[in-house]
Length: 320
Image (cartoon, rainbow, N blue to C red; front, top):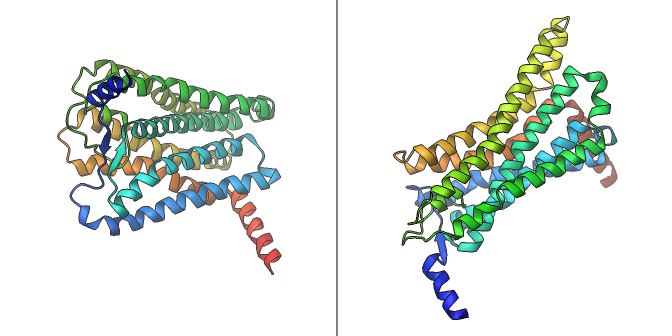
């Protein structure tokens, strides 16, 4: 019975998938790996720095920076999910990934993406309360409330995508096993099946619209209310000061949602697009935000800059 079930598994599912690097540029993978290494190192060091500075600086123990810590943890997770397979292809041409390993990587990439979307929504809510109801800010966003928001974000991302691996396992796969990227995406795996994938498409769209789609709509509504509040302020200086606190968050929203929406559209409607377009957008979506977010917040937040300089100064003084 055990041998029979194993044979049935091999018949229904491929033992492994073959990942793709950058199509047409395979001969230059070693050179292409250099900017990827820079981006990965920037993301790892930058987000670790953000977490270290916030943890060590008592004045940064506020809701805004707690949410920024959540964003940094999510970005680190996304980087660690894609780094091994991407650099494995560029450095050693390791294209093979086991079926179960691929589903695991896909699940974590998607739940971390959904969690990042939810964190960005929480940060928009934080900015709305800080600008529209500044006197009530400490009583609304208490540590208990922030903790509950964080746990809700984790639970929401984990549960909403839990059926996806099981929906993929119920499919029968054809002979083709080559993926379009150097990591595993749900639409990419789904399109290799030779069975009816309507349920997978339907559930994927429901999960996407009920999480990321709703998050994006709520972020836009938050900024409409923020702008309405800012317009009512007495002086131009107050308006600019209020909007300046949102610049970092707006940049983070744009560099996350634009590539994500673009990649979703390409997977669903862009079958005639060159493979290089889909691959490039996927890399932008998963690597650029984790690398740029720490830079954006370090440049725009004087509190983080000052805390970082103090930490570096203390380290230099202790070494001397």
